Image (cartoon, rainbow, N blue to C red; front, side):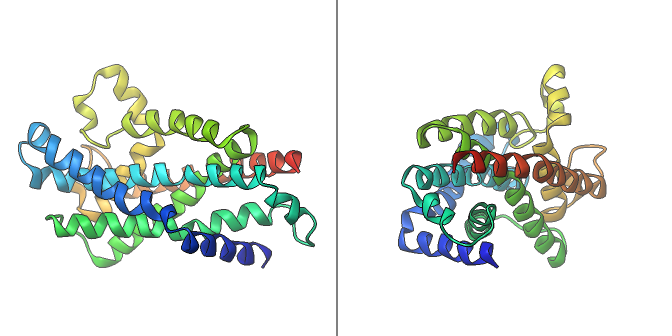
Length: 254
């Protein structure tokens, strides 16, 4: 209950500061335009075909970036003494962190929704059943929430919000660009294919492609059920490892 009340605080704070929605509304649009219309012709020979391949990856990339924002916000609250006030309240120690992560679900939902809506407007078409599309959105949000705990940990450990942002980019860039986000994995050098194969982001992207546009757009030999299990296992590992670490770092700070 404490976490839900603090999640409402997070959402209220977002509504009163609309600029916090810029990255989840404009970023997916800009990334889609840049990669599809600038690189689509060179990579796939046409923007229409490339849009079907790239949009699921762009959605994952957008979620990767937006999930890192929570660390910056928490670090700012920490510096402003907000958590000192929480400490004086009769609430559980982990409630402020759980509330912030739960409230951030609103931003993740908007990011996925804007990406899909803009994609449809410029020609993206679903080739799967509606319930698979819904499951793709839910799976993406579950992964985003799990990923947030890395950012929360960084936000608790870093000395400034600028450091949080810099460290977050160091985590996000190798994971997003070292995957099958924008090009098929089999077009990459052999040494890089090894990293792509074990990169959990690759499995998230392949799952999204399978659920949104069908197996024809997945990597050769990929199985949708197996990819989904990889994603769910990754979520369990992320929460199991980084939630306790983030809580420990938070308790040290206060």
